[in-house]
Length: 458
Image (cartoon, rainbow, N blue to C red; front, side, top):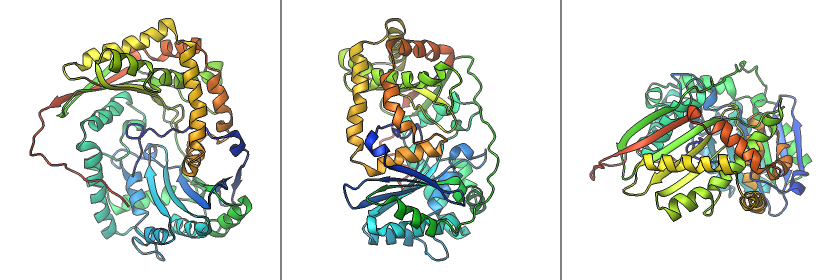
């Protein structure tokens, strides 16, 4: 399983209660492993997540997709746990487990009855240091990864557009490369490449262990020391800065692939939250961009859906998105949509730009601001029901180089955004010289064509 800003929109800041935040405690073991525990005693369940600060952002040309390939190999056994036994042991304990790889991280998780947390820790600690990557198992699994690429990208015209969009929007930053990897790299990947990745990045001083559930913090700390404490760390490679040069002109790419309707993806380079803002703008601009995305595409009554889908029927669907956090400190403010039958992507592009221009000149109404900010409370309530997602919030932030403490201040920062600030970020960032546009030119569909790939489940 993999995540990418293109494929899956994971909401980092899906606000959790302030009272719950007070129960979060953070520790660091002697070997560098960070442990974060949040007690939640509503049901006898615990979620355990191991986050490695290693994603596609760390890959090099010629080895794209190796982070995700190694994620697959983590289920292929150690000296003590044979191939496939990891998942069977968790299932036998009534739990469920999986993993995902993204641009910024790789995460392995279990959701299990609380008395079985030692089992989860034992298995994760074992494969953190004792993974066996044989040539034979890798040769089989890389074929599965290639099938996954065919299923996720090659069979899906919109995914092809999104892959080309990223490759066009970023010219120097590794966010240009797909998490799944390029097919040629996968075809030529070796078990040695996976072993090198594992030895380089899979170490306790490059990992964060997040535990949320019906546990006592000190008991979890004791278990972590028991199972993870003996693992020896190693020196990590120096990570060099990777900064995308400023875009100095509009960029466009057209993708021709079988499809029923055209598709449009457009985006603008935008800043992310930074650890220590050096200017007032760095402190509030990401929050204003978040609210702007909500105004345009927060729900059915948001501007894009109301105007372009309901009133004019210009589009079948439209959307806006923005991630305020990333490990690479690079983000895109994105607009996308599918024109209605008989309409063109050119018409949809003009309409989307017009909606942005209206905000630049007229700002947003108080009602719109109230609606977006009210979503903070609604999401807050929703997130109380998910231990897994509470762990996701913490793990993502910590692995991307922020702190879970941001969760405390985020709702108030969002509520402080003004109409003038939204106008300011729209004028500053949503301009044509900073714009990348990717479109799907749909080609005839072969009625006899069969899917090239198949989904994968560990």
